[in-house]
Length: 391
Image (cartoon, rainbow, N blue to C red; front, top):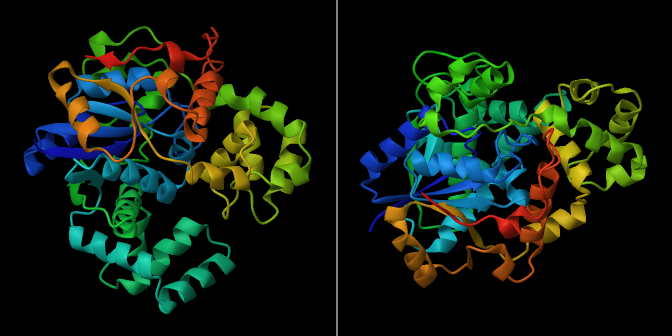
């Protein structure tokens, strides 16, 4: 039995994701696909448009064999932390041979070279990166320029493309963790990651979310098995505003300064913005700058909401890892037995039967907070009442 792994957000699961699963099976010869998927909050510090069980269900219907949850402490990190958690889980299963990921670049050699530069950080790279940061560039832009200087056959734009950024981080994590996973890049098809409007063929998750927000039923064309979608109320970042403001207005600047992701006096910008902001977008734009892009600010605000300090995040990322199963296909239930036999990390199918673990406790809290973000507030502690999805 050959198994390939994918790390994703599926926010929401769309035709491009189904295409990726199909191509992964074709290129790797895999019998099964195991997906490690973000829970109820995403890498950009936003709530997922639908909860983790609905997104896992969509992935199973779209070709995944089994879906695991990427813990909150990794899912809400920058690309490096996101990749670190996903690779550690797939590697810990001891039965996944291939890691498949989307990339804008069709040259796997260039991706590997970029990962090597970032792992070794030669002096020339450090110097160019430092100059870029000192000139006021954001870290992603400064890093892309430094990479292009070390890899003259490429340009900075190549290393600023979102899927390439994640691809490099996957490769770095494989090297650093001495993982046996074999990388398999699949060239992204259709609309670009940052496209905000629906495009013919494949479209980006961002454009699909925008269409859902605007009430455009056309988005269903891009959702596999859309006829089976339940009547779910979508969740958007704006729903976080009153909860985030409650936290910020009760915290002193010194307290905000202890939160994970807050550096270089950013707490003072946040404090000032929290005094005046009238909505979530106003709060973001008041804090964000060329040096601090929206994604970084959103992650920082989310960690403020959860009260996660730098010290606590360090503890979370050193906590014992596990594989939390959200759902499995009926024709792949044998995978659970395979995982139980081979995995070096615990396989969790019921939260109530797993010993206390700060990583899992944070995921349970994340579900409880997410349940407050819809107009009709959902019951709490769903992680203990939701049955394992079997599709």
